Image (cartoon, rainbow, N blue to C red):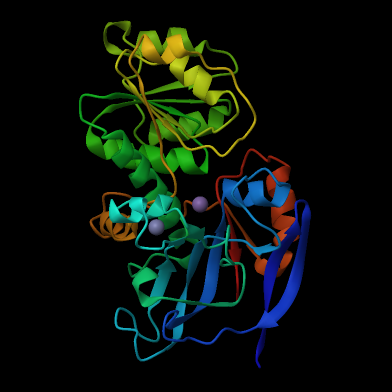
Length: 343
Ligand code: MN
Ligand code: ZN
């Protein structure tokens, strides 16, 4: 059997390159994709460090998977050999309560590629044609990995029921937060961003944020009053910082009847109070992965409403994955999005 290489997290902190068989397309996983680029997400870093409670080991990680269709089984209808595609990371059972209520992204038997089952940091993977989405022409493979975090932002804004009269706080404008900004602003809502890195705040302002708050030297609560109508506070807060304490922070500064979207995976205890939620009658909603948002994200690119061109900041060859993860751990301020390439 033909062999290929993949990047496996053996256990937290231990990354190795392994050799494995090239998969064959079959009845179910009827498309063989040759991976060309795979993004490194905060959640991949979490699996590497052992802080992602959902992950199981050993695991080939990577869920932002872009490649070329190189072989198909007869059941494959949606794509053909030569197509450039991005692969949906969600595998759902199709019959649990969540699946029956059109929430496959929180299926009871959820299997996420790169988390519960092997993902995209390998040369080839076999997947169902239904999970493949055609890339827009002209979008580089490295930038196309950002379609995945864009789907995550679409999911959060959908869960939030974002509306034009919202005054939105995006906490954290790193890789995820900047995608959130690009989607949230399409609603017409006022957008306030907060972060600890000044350069990210400046970029967010250039990308359409209305106000920016530097958490290192400005008081979040006071600034939110200054930037919202009648000092109301945000009507919608989206946690793209995902630190242990961000939920408490957002509860404290939310306007009454506001919505708060959590996206973090921390299991560290943090203090929130009944009063904080009840007195303002807050809606606190989780947003996990995405619910079939790939086509919507790709349509937004095709329509020119969002732009992913050259939004990735660093590329490493996949066999240098260790270097890439070490570089991310260095917290270099130039990091926006790091991508593994496969040529
Ligand atoms: Mn991701
Ligand atoms: Zn299910």
